[in-house]
Image (cartoon, rainbow, N blue to C red; front, top):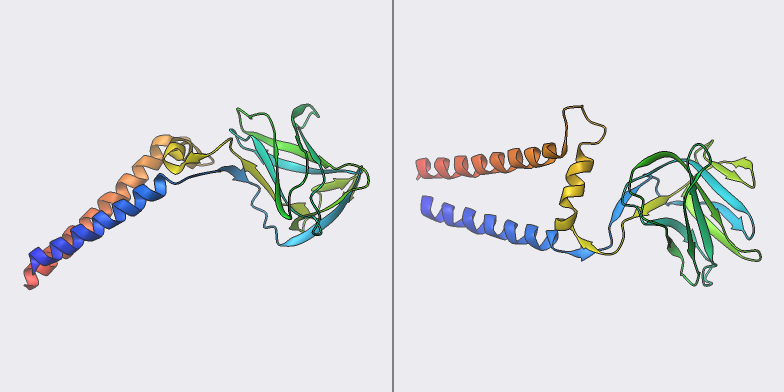
Length: 217
């Protein structure tokens, strides 16, 4: 009985390890972060030539693209320009998308941001004669300005890392971000320490179950 239980436990652990390794080696585009706003409502119909700005954004380090949730009305999306400015009005980055995208999301490449910045103003503009519906949450105040006038709502913004990478390659960055906004003692080591504790607890749990099964047998 104990030998059979040990065999089952070993098979389960091996299967979990295979699943974990496959997940870690999965490659794709990754986010450096988002502004945690759901894209569940149309916030504004942006007309051509108008400048729409959103204040108070936190742009994570390693950001190389700005992603906006949008709807094109079934037509190819228009060209779009974005600009990031700090609290003093200095331009941090600018980007351009030539257009032709479908409804859903549009990504605009910007120069790689090497440090995290808060209080950033994100401005969006499309050419005259075009229009684009941008999505986010309408229940917000003091975030949006259209042509210098305050408008209700907040846009969903995603911040994209450059290129494509695996979760395994991203683990050092995740470990570093894990310690952000925690105690002064926290550091990247905290992430690995927590996972070590979880694995230790899982090992103790499996060992306890096996011992219990052996005693019952």
